[in-house]
Length: 87
Image (cartoon, rainbow, N blue to C red; front, side, top):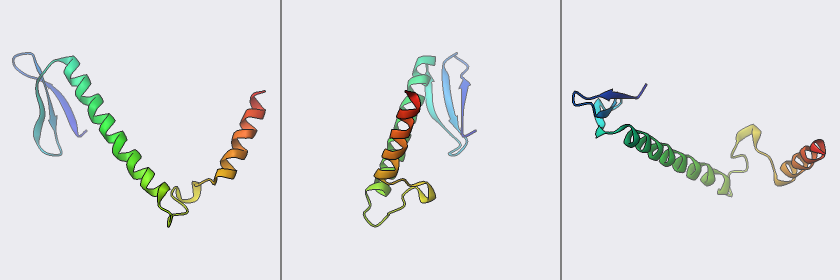
């Protein structure tokens, strides 16, 4: 576990990072910890999506998902089959 929520002596909350061996959040309420974690998760999702987009948009990279990369035609065919299965 890289982060741990810890109750401070005054009842407020802190988040301790075992990666940096330091507090990354202090004097927080439960709602503030939730919002802080949500913000961290959103930022990580943005970073991951930007990296994924860079692979997909790189004209020199024809297999951004390695063996699982689908072409437009393959994905469209699968989509049509899934639609047929639902009706």
